[in-house]
Image (cartoon, rainbow over the protein chains, first blue to last red):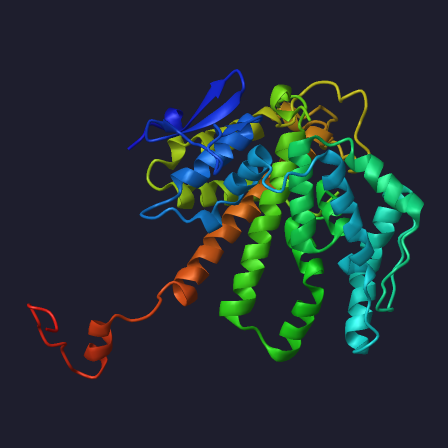
Length: 242
Length: 141
């Protein structure tokens, strides 16, 4: 049984994870190094929680770190930001139904306040639409989000883009990053139509709860990852240089 | 700011999840120690309030000074409870980590329950209807 102190170690380049006297490596065989001690502790905890088999599908923080280190999609900062902001054109919170009226009402009551918060917080116009083409997002709105996201480092951006693809919403993701809503709330709002259908037709545990837990886990991991990679006081900057 | 509830409740739930994840030696785990240390470090201290109070939360009412107007000296650290930004950030991080641990545990439980069993082996299938597979030490031939 490994001693607790040996699960991770501090080095000039960052924090490394120790597995049975070997150093953890990424899928592309790079040395697994993270810029934040809290993140290293959380990753080490993921590994320490594994019992007989390594269940990689539960190790979301490890996966996010691997993505940040290997950058398998080979995207630079500009491309990542563009991909993230592009999601605004198909943002879940902007696509409204007209039928059934109960769902339309639910979307209005639950989503309008968050859209309003984003518009106020970032001083932009977003709006919503019932058209199949979606809302018409002004170029100035996109520019504002592009320049805001540019203030994040590459690691945090990988996390932000991950959360956006999970929730299918830039607005909800910014709500999380800015600590305006909790993960549970963001996931609920992302899955509003599913939740509506579940309440109407009943819950199927092996499908609905399974998806719900997985989405919560991934979203929570992404959010935590972004925050831990953004804390300037505790982060080793060398790793985060773009 | 997100509606998070009481920090102490979050902390307790988070420590419980860490205990479930780590097993017997959870108290020695780096995560357990880190979380406890972070919460201790951010507890409200006695002394003058911060010069730039955070706007998010209203100031808590001062403790009642007693029937003769004497200040309550029993617990100086709660004289003026303005929660600062650092505490809010810590609480949000703790709540997020709690959500992660809890959701992973629940997801794994559901996976084991519904998706993990896979197909039955031929021996199990035969056993369902009361048969045993024939022994063929030399193979099928």
